[in-house]
Length: 513
Ligand code: SF4
Image (cartoon, rainbow, N blue to C red; front, side, top):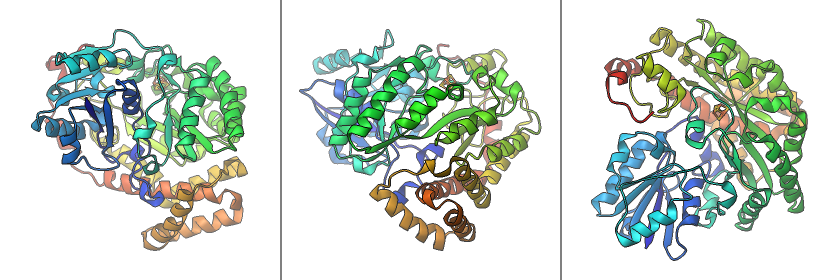
């Protein structure tokens, strides 16, 4: 059996980094870890190929080669996923869809021959046998959440690793918290399951042997969901990195209660973590209560961010507007908080009701749902009726983006961040980073419309933070992505039409809650 595994294309979002990747000569941020894990689970007798559409297009000869096409992705990849399914079916190929999108009611799924819902580890061998015998079912659903200690090392050798800006490793799934808008806890549960330190080190060794040096993203939705286990892992990560002459530095995602545990912060620092993404969401306490994000209410938010930064970690953060309790000045408060916290990479989105979340169920009961979420919280439209006037909300959101990604404002945040972390932000340079630096001087320093602010920023960096020049250049390049992305987003003026055309979802049949 020849299995063609296709990863659909991402649209241009905060996380795509599409405008920054060309500086490094890269095509995509991270390899498709879910598909590569499925590849490792498929029978060894099968031939397998992986095509990541974020790296290269799907060619007719890929489809000619295949017996079956497996596609995996997130909701935001829905339109691209649909195109893959249609092309495969036009050639008479069987199509299988899995991944987080398969846990939703995305209409694109209806076009696939087989849908695998939930975590696939315990289903793949059954599906493979059924495909071989021609008796595959339209729908497979995982009966239980799998034990991660049994998950094999992803087949990373099938990925063109040089095309990515970071490698990816998953340590855990699930999160103990209860944020109302979150679909992670609905899909992966509230009991974090982890791999063993040995498994993680084996994955690192595999990546190392493939020739990778540089950033490794621990892709967990909440890396510290199981603090007891992560404290056992981190010394092993530090030891592995030391034994291999520190070829990797790490970034991950963690909940804000990280700031309550200085032992954990120290362990992250010693294991060579240089960045952490945190869901801060909002400085408005009433909105945090509304969304049951109680872990963000236990300490002063600003002090928490400063403490994490003091361990040499760059804090990247997610913010949301559109909560019922957001006051009229929420936009100014978000801008001020992002400025005071010195968080260069601030991903601000509109609240979106993802399928089958607590938020979805509440809004449905209140008759406020408008339509399915597209899973892209950077679109300037809402999939539910907000408490605040919709136009006021969209205008305020646009104003936040215009303000925080004004080049001067962004570069000031980077400088404030560098002052706060001192030289702790210094990390070894990869060849792609050097290339990115030269391209940055050319494209941002000579060709961009913000070159004046760019040179002022570089001059200040050289005067005050020379030893962190590498980090400053990396953040300058990331800034280019955000300037471009938010410039395009805020130029969007048709969003309200989308809102007005929508039919209340509460009137239509709903998926299984
Ligand atoms: S902390 Fe993050 S992953 Fe956990 S429930 Fe909240 S939003 Fe979801």
